[in-house]
Length: 407
Image 1: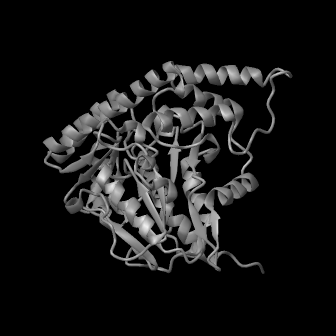
Image 2: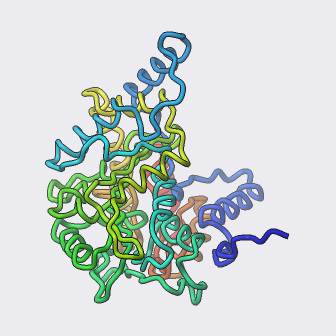
Image 3: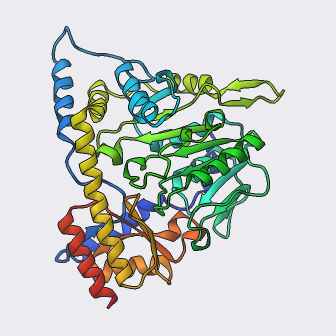
């Protein structure tokens, strides 16, 4: 009989958001007269920007005509989108990123899961706690960790993010090979200063490590002093891979489009000490296992960079940040310390009690869904994440219910 990959057996029983959905669905089924407001999972609710809709329709019409029909496209993405990304997301901020260093995909979640395939099994991991579960779970699946003991996997250097350090991990004293960073952060909403990112780049350079930098929420940064890209830091092109998404920027959670930047100057060694460009390895992996993002979706993504698209996506992120401001202010009125919500669509709340207990309290007494921080790691215990992705009416109603439940 064929054997399974036993690394999967090390994983917790279910993915965090599957567990949340199970609990919420059970409550909703038992209480059909009590409508639930979901501020847990980070899914957007507002319609796509009109510029993207127009581009999507136009590209779909192209697919209906023989002379403009598109079949397989370049696995790395069409030039029109890669060039727009390079010009608007990087050159405009003084970053040197070439279009052919950009790989378009169907989601940053997929890229953050798949990128670990190009690294060795014995790569030493440095992963924040709390953390987006995909970073950790995919390395467990790949066999880079030991067993889960007391809520943490053996063989992982956990980077504690706590109230004491503002939820920004400190530089470790020992070496690491593969470092996961996410700013603005999911789940905490914390941001890293230029000095903090510089310290991480310097650490990676000293240790010949690679930083996987997830900047999926950079469109929510409003503080002009906060970097939007790791490549705004000198030397980052030699040690960092960056992942971005159109999901939260332009509401593409249902369309699926993202990209990963792998500079040609990022190198790693083989067992004999020979150096290899990670760009070439990722290109080989990408072209082998991926057939490219659909042409109409890429045309819709390119519309984000038109003047109309820029105005409309800014209005969209401003709307969600307006929700976030209301949530943040309401939590503070309730005496609950929190971060995020100013440069990120998430608010990370220090509840002062068990995070699953607080989740159940809000679900049963307020019919409001949050995300228990313990699901993101040991340091998430005592916290919950509330998402700003919902209608203004639902957010206002949810906050009224929460205030009544905690009165």
